[in-house]
Image (cartoon, rainbow, N blue to C red):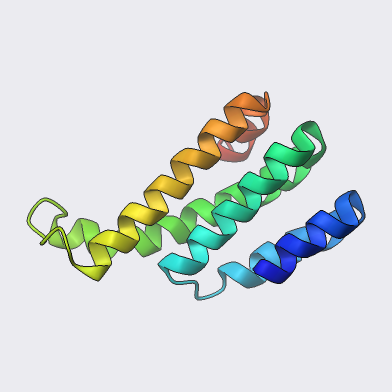
Length: 122
């Protein structure tokens, strides 16, 4: 994903037509670190381009949430409270949640809550 981040920095909005398929590919069989990277990418895009990414958020947010749920399911199954705080699975679940909350904050600050609600109401 670092390559995609650099593409966004260099090519700006010209990279938008490729982003939907890129996010879909990044989410295919994604592990926790991959989901964190996608959330970070969406965060970067939302912070940088604000309203210009509304269509991308609407198209990708549902897929991101589905994959995020799949990644977090094992931690929920074992019960995060019962798990040892230093286990890798708990740390990864915490990283995913932190990246997701940061994205939600960025979406709210970029006035993209309507786009997020439309994506979730599909």
